[in-house]
Image (cartoon, rainbow, N blue to C red; front, side, top):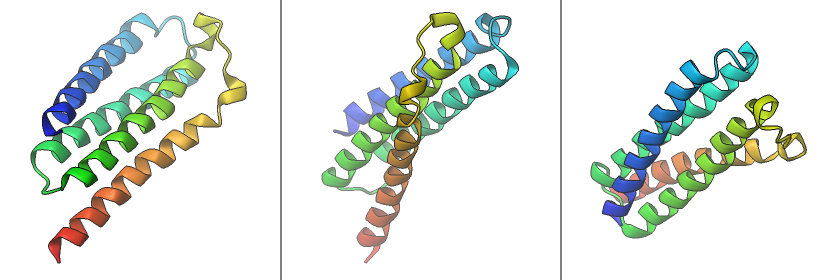
Amino acid sequence: MKRKILITGSILGLTAVILGAFGAHGLKDSLTVEALNSFETGVRYQMYHSFLLLIVSSILPLNTKSLNTIFYLVISGIILFSGSIYLLSTKALTGMDISAFAWITPIGGALLISAWISITYSLIKSAK
């Protein structure tokens, strides 16, 4: 499981760098400042949580059940939070207006928060 989390964290980090460069260079002339800032927020949170997966899998003393829970919360959170931000901020270019589904962004954020709560709970529980 730890290997799977490390690989996933690395891939998500790699794609965050690629998307960040694409946003900074490829989208800067095509998006409004507000849309570009939103896109960068999605990239930033994806990168933060990529680092989190690397730390969770290699440093923190967590059991397999906790690792699984955290892994799926982070993956789901990144997909819903960052993914929806990418789609919402690029709708002028893609023609995909998912505004009716913008409610999935805070659900993704809640999943990321839940991952942090799960880490905290697992560490407190393991310290006893």
